[in-house]
Image (cartoon, rainbow, N blue to C red; front, side, top):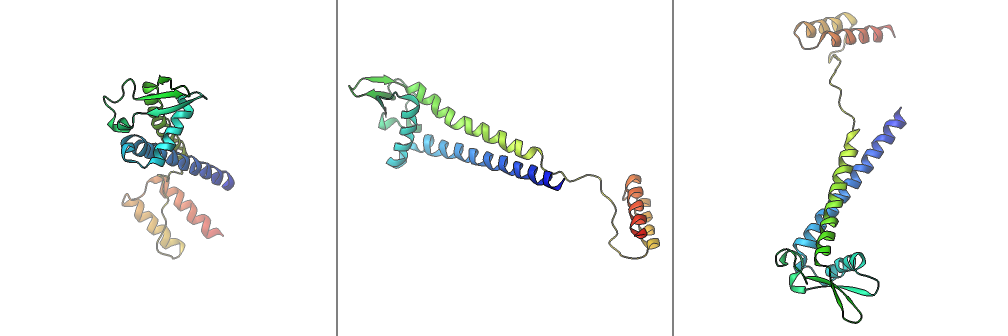
Length: 176
């Protein structure tokens, strides 16, 4: 039983951790790859351009984008000729709208996946039981503990079921 609980909580921690990583990736890509891309250093452009090149251009093509229209500064969000794949002969193939779709997917898929994993990881978290048993803060003999229990029940501090359960526990403890 304990091993099962540990295994489930470990699995929950894995799902929660993976969800947090995916959400962090989505947030970083949104900020670095889209919003602040125009002011990012050249190595960030190289990495993002490499992703687009691998996803959108053929083996003999290279990804290119108008440097003045990178990220959030693009005119009208996206337009023909903003991004293209260029082959060795200099022929251009417009991929402006495909690039936009890939950018949306690179943000949306990790964000949705991260939320799913967070929810999945939180699904089996232990929940504190609403039923409680009365425990005496005062030590003492059986009669004083039973009297304290009866007083708590009479004042409405505990339910009848809690009274019966705690009374049975006290009697059981005294038998030992």
